[in-house]
Image (cartoon, rainbow, N blue to C red):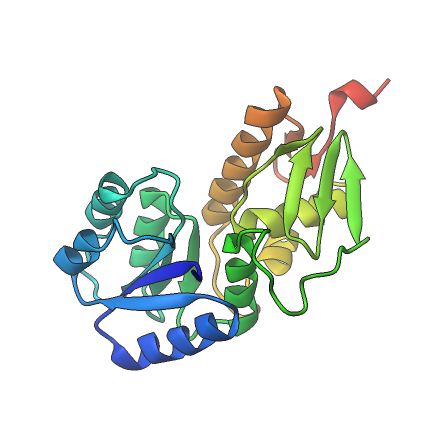
Length: 237
């Protein structure tokens, strides 16, 4: 059985595009048109993620995400949201809802493919991803396999959204270097997308909490007026 992605959208053309990409990457997909249909399908076998298309200003994204998580067989089910161009308020609402990834329309296919790669169980064969990559970053006990899209700390996996993954990659490429918010926007978000400084703070905060929950200490330093740095105090003498 292929892993299944549930797509909630009223835009059939978007669904067909996403379904085509998903199928090429080894996924099955199914369309749900509206809240009730989405919630009714949350118990489907093989479901690995939900994609919600938000293109209406009054879309109740937080209530919808809460309902999806409540109806899911596991609370950690990844949820991605597509937000219409210029819908900054919806983008912020999606952030507050705690979704795993947000795509602004028109979306970057490479980012979407990267997100799909983070969903695919390792035991499932995927053309082009069957070889182990030696493209690895290591710092303070954290191992980051770039091609495998995997992060672990002393054998314990650290689960990150694609944005947090790209932020950590930027930090680990230059540990203890202070990156400005503009630096981080260029590293983790698509070119040309307007990203507020507060949005960067939110995602760095998520990354910080994810690392601290596994490592047991905070290794992201906030430099007031400058930005952030990956810095392990246990390594500094």
